[in-house]
Length: 401
Image 1 (tube, helix red, strand yellow):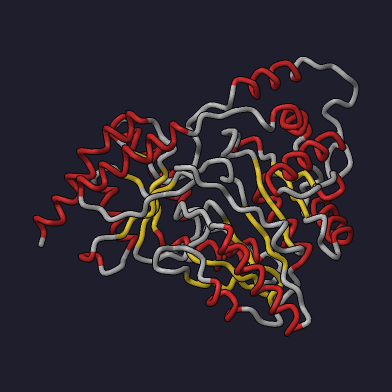
Image 2 (image 1 turned 135 degrees about the horizontal axis):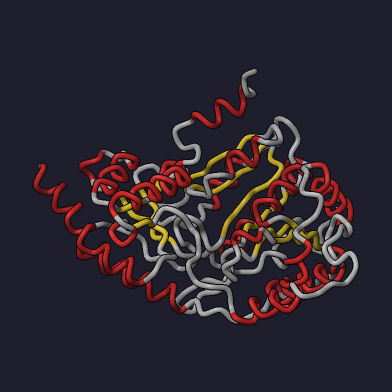
């Protein structure tokens, strides 16, 4: 019996799973050439260990033999976990937030799927500035929606005017990601204010208020004194989705949450819809054990200066090799331009780098043709060892002209 036509089409599209595919190819290359000789910048898998406070808490809680310690809880999550996430969000957003606004989730991906299940009807649209995290297309399509891709400005900041022009009566939500994966851009408060004004004006004109969904798993990882602007004070119909995958180096534990703006006019209905979606999508509830861990350790201190040092190391190598790139303001990705000789074919540039045992993700997967993404959440030793390969890869292009 064949798989569904939708899944078959999605699996066979050029950008489908490109990042994971490169990551898995890297595993095979390491078997052939040795792990020290393959430089895998393909996937955002943090190599920093979780803070000691998190590990100690997990070790202590693992010894608990309390009855039903690992059992079901309300679909929205443990009350103490929701209270802790409300406290966290209140500190970040600068407005009063109660636990009734929070739904615990299976990572930020699970949170986004719950939100889109709750607000997207077949035929609806979700507007996103491009480039963006590659899976957004499928997350929206899962519920019969269409992702409307709006190119960012030349410097990859928000093009609010272009986003405003893309809004229609079908727009269920606008989705932003700051710090941005893959560009590393952090959207300043003035851009958030301008976007909020554009959404409010559209709501007045069309009679439909789009949600502003903010995907923020990299919020804590910013550089050079930057801060991620709060959205709750700017726009009432806003929703935060996030996780502890990047900030506390816990990607495999799948623990995140949804927080609906307490000022949202339909807050109670939206929260109830997200809780219902958690159940019917098969997540049932966020992982019980790590709800307990995170409730105690969400504010554990992590040393993100190591990412900044690695960013600077890799930028120095790319400059030496002659690869044009942005300067990341947050997250742990470098957004690099494919050389002109590739004519904007970023996949071919990734292939060329792979011939030199460098693994990168093609920008077209992120809605950013002509660019590639390098994830520098790898060891400093890996970055330094990659220097020779980057230089040789670019030298080979010069010699082939």
